[in-house]
Length: 278
Image (cartoon, rainbow, N blue to C red; front, side, top):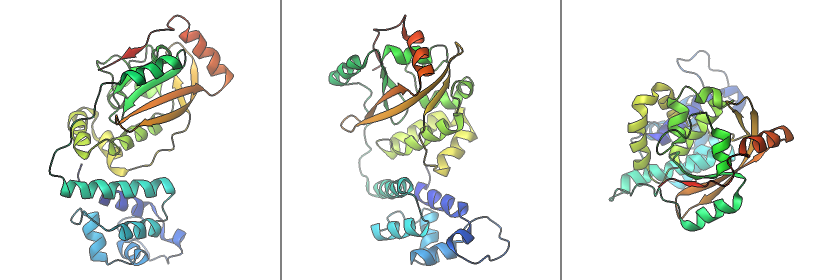
């Protein structure tokens, strides 16, 4: 995955107008945004050191340096968390001696039991790579006809970037695409993310790679779906981390009465079928 820490710092630096930080306009530049010299001065580090970090030649900056860069870039809390996470996994790359195991794809019986309790609600169990590991019948209903569950096993990230139907099914496809590439950075290990990138990249093309490397922290607003049956669904999402399994339980709720009626209509013939993919 190249140099994620440096890529993120450079992307944020390029997105900042110097005037917004009270810095003088230094005239036309070859590239937009904040100059490396200005960022280094604000963070209290040398330009040479900042260059090494951005180019991936220094992969173990101290916590104080990471915090100083976060302050200098005026990062939002979610962006600060991402910067610290990238610094951690960059350092882990340098020190790791054993290749981590792939993420578990089996769902524990207790988690499956929780899904059954959520019926007839809409819920799935997934991992950071986008594998749909288990789902309620209502989730099958709201995605029926979209192609999302056609693969064996289904993978949300692959569907978003390789199936043209995804751009119609997800009303906010751009935001959803940013969510899925961002979650790859939060996968259990860099190696697992690299494995998926090697498999997905050749078929997803430059759009996937571009989004992966620009590190946009997603907003994760309501999920808007255009169901093939003609329903426009608006769903609120709650994500519950299952850290011992490197998985998430995602529960979706209708955001309005119109969506609630549509979900009831779609779910009526399918209620009761719980699916788990191992």
